[in-house]
Image 1 (cartoon, rainbow, N blue to C red):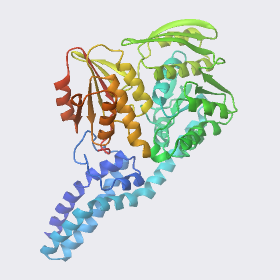
Image 2 (cartoon, helix red, strand yellow; image 1 turned 180 degrees about the horizontal axis):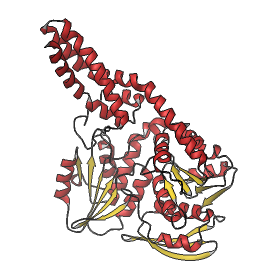
Image 3 (tube, rainbow, N blue to C red; image 1 turned 180 degrees about the vertical axis):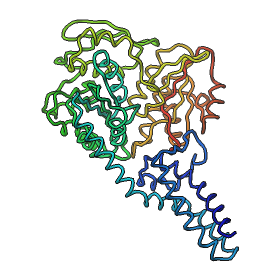
Image 4 (tube, rainbow, N blue to C red; image 1 turned 90 degrees about the vertical axis):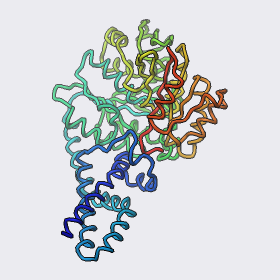
Length: 472
C-alpha cells in the first residue's frame, strides 16, 4: 500500500516537472541558458508554446521519472506518515533542480546520439555529388534561401534545410531525411550564437558556394560584441575549401567589410562589377516594381516582395542563380511569382483589414524595414510587438530606437510582454506618439481585446516579432 501511494505522489511530482521541461526545450536544451533563467517562472504553466514530445524529450522525461521515483519511494517505504509530507514538500521546493539533475544525467547519452547523427549526415553529404550552397549572415538567411530555391527550381532539383533550421542537428535532419538521390543542389542555412558554430556547419557540408547576407548586432547576449559576430560569420569564408564563389551583400557595411577581407572568388551585389544590378525599386502596398540589369541588359518585373532589405536578399539569390548557370530569362521569369517567406513581411488579407505578418523577424534591421513598409498603406496603422531580445547591454538602447521608429510609423502601438515595455513605450513617446495610443498586453487574449478596441475598417495591422514563452 505504501509503495502504491509513493508511486501516485511520484507521478504527480513527475507531471509537475513538465513546465521545466518546456523551459529547457525553449532554451534549445542548453543547460547554460537554463541555469541563467532557473528562477524564471513566467508562462511556465501557460503561454503560447507547448511542450513538444520529441524523442529527445521522451528520453529526458524517462530519466526524470526514474529520478523522481528513486527519491520518493524510499521515504514512503521506510519512514512514518508525518515524514511523507516533509519529503513531498522538499521535492516540491527542489523540483526545478531535480529536473536539472535528470538533464545532466542524460547529457552524455544525448552527446553520443548527436555524434552518431552528425557522422551519418557527414557521410551522406560527402557522397552527394551535386552543388552545395551555404548561407549565413545576421539577417535575411531564411528569405534568401527560399528565394534562391524558388529561382533554381526552374532548372534544378533542389533540397533545402526546412523552415529556419540552421543548426548542426537541423543539417543532420535535412541530410538524413530530406536529401534525395536525384537532387542536384542542396542549400543550407547556417545560424550561430557562438564562435565556431559556422565552422562546424561548414566542416559538415563542405560547400562550393556561399552567400553572406547582411551582418549586424544580433544575439549580442551570447556573442558579446559585433567584432565576435564578424569573426563568426567570416568562418563561412575561412572554412571554404576549393570554393567556386561567395556572394556578399554590398548594401550592408559589415558584410562589405567581410568581402574586402576575403581573398577567394567573390561577388558583391550593389557594386559595379556585379552582373546583377538594381536600377530602381518602386514600393507600394501591393508589392515592388523592380528595374534591374543582368549582364548589361535591362529588365522590369513586379513582385509581391516589399521592403528594401528583402529586395537585397532577392538580388543575392538572382546573382547566385546566375553563377549556377541559369539564363537571364529563367531568372526574370521566376521573379514575378516570388512570395515572401511565411511570417516575414507576409501580406494577408483579413476581414476588413490587411495584416502584415512579420512575426518571425527578430532583429532591428528587419523591424526598421517593417516600419517603412507599413507607411505604404492607407488607413489606420497598428503595430503589435514585444520588441527584440538577446541584445546584451544594448537591450534598452535597441528597443528604445525600435519604439521611436514605431511611434513615427503607426497610429496605435500594442506592446506585448514585460521584457521591453519601458524601452518601447519611452521610445514611442520620443517618436511623437501620445500615451493614450500606447497599449500593453501580457498575453494573446489581452492582445486580441486591445486590438479589437482600436481596429477600424480598412486598417493595417503589423505583427512585428513574436517572443517565445522563455521571455516574460
